[in-house]
Image 1 (tube, helix red, strand yellow):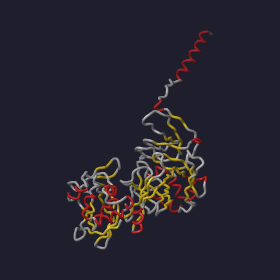
Image 2: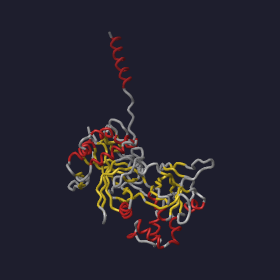
Image 3: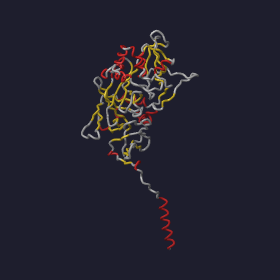
Length: 430
């Protein structure tokens, strides 16, 4: 009996030892504090955020300089994957707003001012148009990764306003605790030119240089994912017999074609050549507007596309030195379609498409913008379908205004204070 009793005791301890692992102390550098859903007010992102398609998904605040607790929030099962949201110098934060709790407005109660509500009216929004563009946006794999099954659901809705309110939440975009940025505009310019160099048509619209053997000479810029060629300056490109797609009659118009990234050239044969972006010479973009102000040629109060053109017309002897300050040259190719296509790969829609800094705001995302200046009041749902060399920071967007004189008038003068929100699939808090 005693032997049997010892056998039982030994079996008990051996069995326990086989199921219990050594518990190691948690390192301070990976310590995390889980926040229950009702307590969630804000998600901070400092270095890099990747939202994975998991159930549930966690978004963590990476600690850079010192050890501190990390707040973790659950994100919905159909949430998005963001590959490009890489924070540069300041955190991008999202403050939650729930559309289902309001009728024609979206309200926010900032975390630190519980008695103040900021209300953005959008009861006059055209939700039929919004959902149609959302469906077209879903042709991009990038958008489908973000919005998942909502891309398919959008095809079968009768009340499109209800669809938006029922399935999405708005998150305010902040840049280093600030919610205000800048909205500018861009457009599709119209130029006059010829396929051959003659008479007044002497300013080249460059196409990508060729290697020996007829292949395009290009490398990929890993930071911007843009196609570039050899790192010659603007002056070098002009002096190296770089091949031209066509020739136009105005040097300043050609320069601003590069800034816009696409355009139409009315040829002397009564045909129209549609041109689009096809890489760069690999140089960094430099704003000639800032240079003109620094040199005292122009003032901050009179700095629009139209103002720069007027100055250039009066100062032809200074044009080359000013333009060469921006060593970045954009190359073009003939577009297959009359539609302007952005970096997302879908056609742009006037007053609905924006260029963003995709290091902060992912391409394919649906956004709400509220922008005000002395001449403009814009409160639209828009779509991040493009990127631009001059568009840097989180609360920053460039609104595509379309084609024609009216589009030029809007884009050339638009520089408005901007607040911006991103639509994400509604969080199903547990």
